[in-house]
Length: 511
Image (cartoon, rainbow, N blue to C red; front, side, top):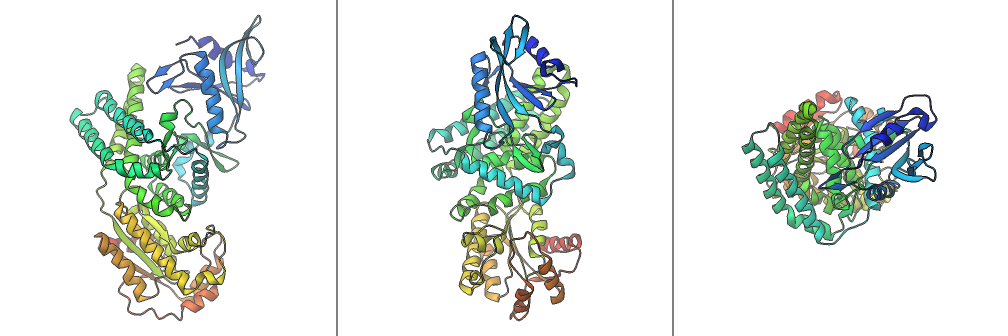
């Protein structure tokens, strides 16, 4: 709307910032960012879209203040304030007391090569994903709850608008293909409405980050920091916490990082409170729709950009087509849910094998991984790495833990998710009970039993660090005396290298 060219030229000059190194300019559809020495300044573009209005100086000022408010808790120390660009007799100034002609968000500059979209080529290790899950849970826990019934309809309306925009704005895609997807997504949206309403009533709809993808997460001092949350439209940022997470899961899947997406999802589930875990597992029935809608939005934005870029539209169109393919693939999973149980004494590597198998099973991003160690500690009100007292391993507590595993497995299968359960399952009745869960849900079942010499198991548990398991060499000695009984599960040699063990296990699951 307004001519911001002189202001952008001013902010792009090194002398404006008192530095003698070049200023880097980054353009997005809604803002221009200037990286100047240790600082960054973000100016809202004077634009108006159906979902965003920065058309006046007052609205841009309000948006800058809003950006500070919604990002402060997620990124403490990164957002430094809102500063004016003023006009004086000597010309434009950054700050000062002259006539305010623009506003900018002032940030502490970080290493832009450390955003996760720039680091994705090497994949992400489990400690980083665990820390990221913690940051996201903390963000969701802080986010204000929205229980007004209107928010569910607002979400559905926004989703329908995206689907209609795709019908009319997808460039280079067969119209029947786009129409078929839009119809299928619309049907899925209507079918999901009762569960979405139930989750709204349970407090799952919150004022979330809203734009949680790889580019908006940065490593600072090695720790993940969420930044650049949506500030310009509360309606878009007000959503189910699973839908907020789905943006990041979709982004990982779109870039071929299914293992990381599966591990992140399970890390989010492992960190859920005891009173929330059943609700969170049941909510996974919404995941295919949520993942698909996130990809559809990225496709729509890419096609919108292609329409604006003229001669430079080819890359944006290619992005749009790729995201549309992702949206179609994620909406209709073609892998029926199944249950895999991984048993064996402590130290056989049940959790390691289960984590390797989970991404390969069922609908994207993979199976729900249920660990007896995690559920025992959740039932005890303890954290993953808290060490439990001996009485937490009494037979009655173990019975409750196994009952919880079976209950969660049933809920996950009912939600359309495959499940991998890892627990010792030393007794025949325990093995029979977990197999019965699969029969009840009409799902295929595979039981895998890992075994290895006792001296190797003792050495493995002795070497464990930063793991949920409390097993010790003495525990292995006790387990060696268990009466395992008749074992119908497939036996696997836990001494094998993990890749070979994983291949053998996958072959048994495929049958």
